[in-house]
Image (cartoon, rainbow, N blue to C red):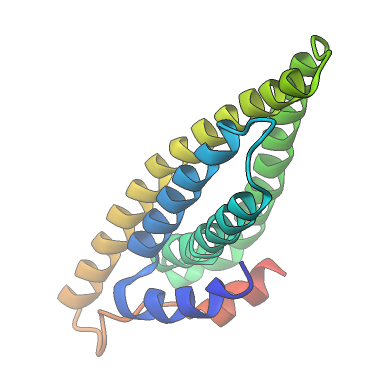
Length: 176
């Protein structure tokens, strides 16, 4: 994630947060699938490479999504939206973690071998892939809202409507 975020920031400034977040979420969802298919003889190297690519997808989704959300707001709404987005982010992460922990715990009740453990983790990762795939929906909504905000800015005669109204550094500070 740390390696991808600077690149995602540059891409967000060029294309907007919505499209970058959408690609990041799709990469995250796709790179979760190999973990769902894990077996007792799965290569550790394969998992490491997949995890790096998955982390890159996550790095390309969080900050651009927040940037798109802030860019779709009026400047007067940003101070109210910042804590709300922060709370949603934290609650969403907690709920997702809880769901996956429950799924894994349920699967581990029936574990009596390495293959059984792999199956339990596979089930949890299928849920994780599904949750990541569901995140595509808000990314599309954000992409449309950001596009509408850019069009409105262009119609209002703003000097540079193609640039995101709030830079990614400001978003990072607001969420810290």
